Amino acid sequence: MSQDRTAERAGIRAAMDRLLAGTPLRSDGALTVLSLAAEADVKRHVLTHRHTDLKDEFYARVRAQGQVPDSERKLRQELEKTKERLVEVLEENKQLKAEAEAFARIINVLELENDQLKGKKGRTNTVIPIAGPW
Image 1 (cartoon, rainbow, N blue to C red):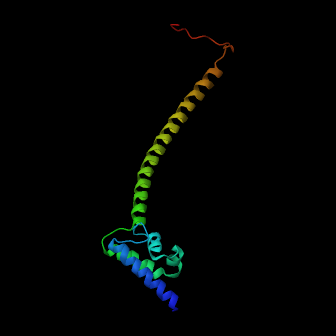
Image 2: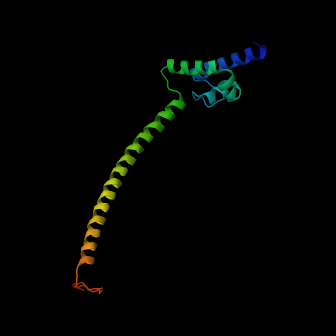
Image 3: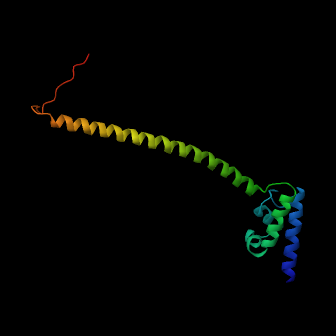
């Protein structure tokens, strides 16, 4: 391993220690790969592509402290909202199906009535007004 990579890995480990201790120097202190990269003064892809073992180590250390990484917490919140929305959508879907079935029954009744009216003999094609209180 080159001297540069060794120094880079040492810098990342030092950044891990600072973040986990709650004493960040260069980042917002969040327990994410993005903050770790900022704290270590490296690009994010260095952690996600070159030093994946350090990224995994970081998340393992975060979990070992009993903390949940911010990214995981956000995903859990999003999952919870998605589950709630799914329940709403399923209920709405159930209502719409019931309404569609009711409309289908209404249409069938109207078709039958229409057929009965057309089938009556001696009827003219005139409109008969309905008497009302108006």
